[in-house]
Length: 424
Image 1 (cartoon, rainbow, N blue to C red):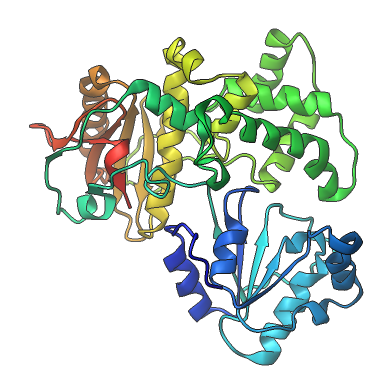
Image 2: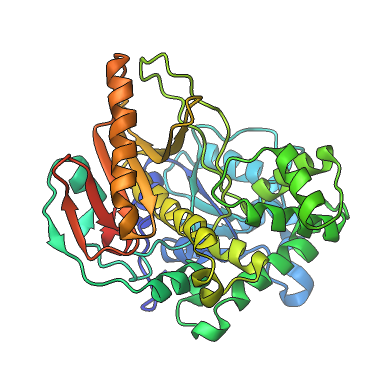
């Protein structure tokens, strides 16, 4: 539906592509990341299942007769379908009956239990993950440097302008939430704070109707925030809660709650790199902990821009989370998957992007320009060790930097790119 105020998203092209190839498309992701707005832009009619009007009339109608709510001009948006899980099967059945592409767009901010969903929807309903806005989408990156061009060998060095540390910290605290872009700095923390409150006090209960201990949910969320951008284990999270908050939580409860956070798209962990690089180097299989947006971690820690500037170690982890959020968005638009690299020789690469052809690209993330040499040397050392071991080496080495005023390639071949100049 036409909307002159709509801010284009990078995912728009893939939405069109998937609608032309499948009968239905399910767009999933954290609440408030823009799913409904983008889906409505690509739709010609809609029904909002979560609309409270007339005592949640739409939900009741969907529960009584799912087929009725599917009637309307296509593509038809069915927002928050997971509140009435049988809608999934109803959509699948209708897609089969009509035998046409681009019939429905479903959006969901939670993954329901499979109980009541009889069919996977494979071949009929495609899935896309939507994330909060990248800096390029929110117009906080100039986009002077294209990830695709770099990978294709079309890089041109250029000055990208000065970057202010305080501004970077503000972008982290504000997050990539479309509804927070124009919020004054003094109030930017309120949206992610309210997000956490809404999840703990309402969304988790609505997920399956089970009442859980909100205090322990918050304890675990704060522990995750303290361990943002790390590969800590569940046991370490439990220990962290005991040592920092002087409280205890059962390890099985930790596992259960982490699964809930995943199903609600609150967390967005970066999987380990497990490609066969034909090297004897053993890679660790721990996920790197991330929230859907670094602003959530800041809200849980009570960290504004000033506090981050006063704690550069924490600021570094939050900046890493910001960059990896953006890299994942840019990578997916280029058909790449994102991972992190960690081996048993204690060598790490912050982000690895891998294509379907097995080619991979290595990125280190550093807030300060004074860390570029160290990051570049680390990339070169790991690449060399893989080469010596007859493994498949990364095709590109790059340092994503915060406080750099230029995009360039060093004499050793490593690229240096400011995150505020990067796009897909």
